[in-house]
Amino acid sequence: MHVAGFVPACEGRSTLELRNVGRSGLRVSAVGLGCNNFGHSLDQAESSKVINVALDLGVTVFDTAPVYGASYGASEEVLGRGLGRRRDEAVVVTKFGVPADRANGFNTSRAAVLREIEASLTRLGTDHVDLYLLHWPDWTTPVEETLRALDDIVTSGKARYLGACNLSSWRFVEAHWIARTRRLHEFLVAQNEYSLAQRTADTDLLPALEEYGAALMPYAPLANGLLTGKYSTASAAPRDSRLGRNLWKTGDRHLTSGSLHLADALARFAAERGHTLLELAMSWLLSNPHVCTVIGGATNPGQVEANVSAGRGWRLDAEEFAEVDRICRAAEGAGR
Image 1 (cartoon, rainbow, N blue to C red):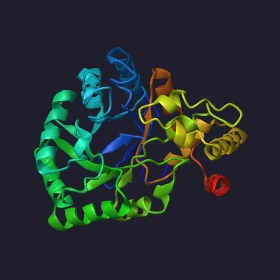
Image 2 (image 1 turned 90 degrees about the horizontal axis):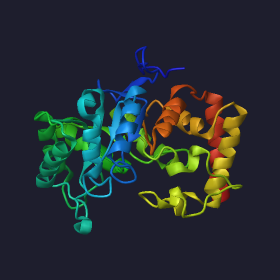
Image 3 (image 1 turned 45 degrees about the vertical axis):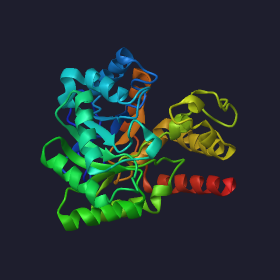
Image 4 (image 1 turned 90 degrees about the vertical axis):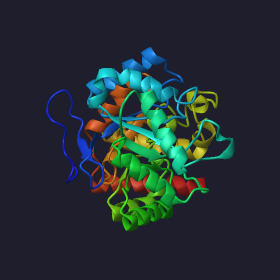
């Protein structure tokens, strides 16, 4: 079942549907690829294999940032080389605002933004990025200053569309109000953490996005591995597992008793309907009309194939949605 307004991918190499990003004409694959492992746990050769498999499967969204990778800019460089002549098949997403030297916090001043876009384009080996996102809010720079710099970047053709990561709902609304009243390019998409294990966006951010016709591009859709089916109360991996050693050291946050009981309950719900927990996690997100693409990371081609497969078919109906909500509320109550 396709949600009304979404555009299925053309027949051919992939059945991944294409979705419009908010009220724009930009169309993206329902499943995207997070590139945080590029230049970190994956070298160039391994990353290139993942990139090409993703493209072959119909994935168009490649999400990176200067701070991804073992060194500043490494992920962008690896992605640029990996795409090579296939650059035009990709919707490249990168970010700004987190400098290499983070001792003084974030920086979204006009000077910093204009400097960062040039550096990112050089590392990516391209003349434009498709989506340019504010990575983290900078409380020392007026929002209007940042928006005016971004407006110039779009007008110059160095970025096609704009978005923001990790903004609270009121900050997102403020940015939209300033952009509209000053006739500047607006944030088209919000990229925030959102999954069956992290649903704070339900009550604040999603209503704001609906009001302004913007889309949600969830990151950590599998709660950094919790919702893949590999973890349960019966066989929880130790804290030094991959979940504990990843880029954000999320083991302590996700490998808790409450989270593992939630994963168990959701896995049972999915199994009763002939699906995996991974398929449920992806389907639940893609059944939400505000979600344009789900950003999933991968450390090998098999994980890309699994994410794409999970994002192709099942869409929860109203009854299934209600049951999932009940499971999540029960787990939240038990964890208090």
